[in-house]
Length: 353
Ligand SMILES: NC(=O)c1ccc[n+]([C@@H]2O[C@H](COP(=O)([O-])OP(=O)(O)OC[C@H]3O[C@@H](n4cnc5c(N)ncnc54)[C@H](OP(=O)(O)O)[C@@H]3O)[C@@H](O)[C@H]2O)c1
Image (cartoon, rainbow, N blue to C red):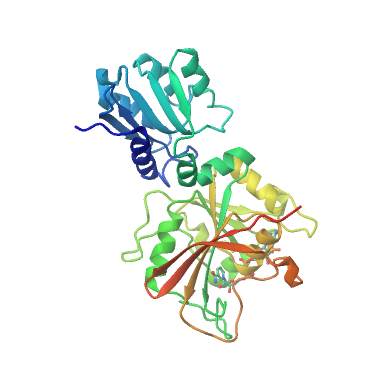
């Protein structure tokens, strides 16, 4: 087999890492490519699920003795601690790897230190190769580990004029089946789906990740969270159907903000404690407005249908903006057609001061 460069190997490792998206939480996604002393690929691996072998261990097992004197190319700093599995830093040293190339350092204080252990054992360690790309592939986990609360994606569906329902309240369906299938795939990549009690009372959603064609449930279900200050979620609400875990987050349990409603920052901190790294905020408009007003949204995914309603509720209510200078400015990072609809992905711009 032809030899490959470290840069090419990292590109491949990043591709491998992405295969774990949605199944590794609360762990990160990680990919690893092992090159022998001649630069030939002798092992590949990715972290597939929490508790399962780490990417480096999978790649080392494939490589066997050919790892000796070789280079491990890995998207995240190898762990240095014994959790459900042993430290990857030690496994790399024991396999006789002479160089380790890392895209992103591990921000997790419990697991970091792998680079130092490797260097102390005489292994050459290089950091930062394709760092931005690897960071983007792991953005939810890295962000949540650095700051201690989950990465929040607000998803909404609306017409071109921003309406989420008609004047008489009917809203099924604003967007196409293709867009709704896309949403279910998105639910499959997060750890929790969050909705306000207003949406539960109005629509009685299931909030599960499903195959829309046959209704079957995805193997891994996000935690369903209803933000419900005073516990108004009906006992027979579909979110209580047992199909997935559900948390009715009340102000009494989470803590209340100045308006007496659930304190959203405390809610996110509590979710982080439960191992939630990525959250899909599915509205409705009032809860989304409160999250945006508090600066707690990291990414916006809007499904925009080629339709107009002219009247009816809007997808967002009161985000704390009263004058144009206070508008929440966004940067569009992707626009993709999904069936007849557009999926617009945007990032809120950081505010000055
Ligand atoms: N187009 C879309 O993408 C989309 C998505 C979802 C829903 N919807 C539509 O939205 C409508 C419901 O709208 P909605 O605004 O009433 O529902 P909502 O945003 O789901 O729920 C709002 C409720 O959340 C509770 N809440 C708890 N803590 C809060 C906090 N810190 N800040 C704000 N709210 C907090 C409040 O009730 P308590 O004070 O009792 O806790 C509040 O009334 C439905 O008709 C549904 O179809 C549209």
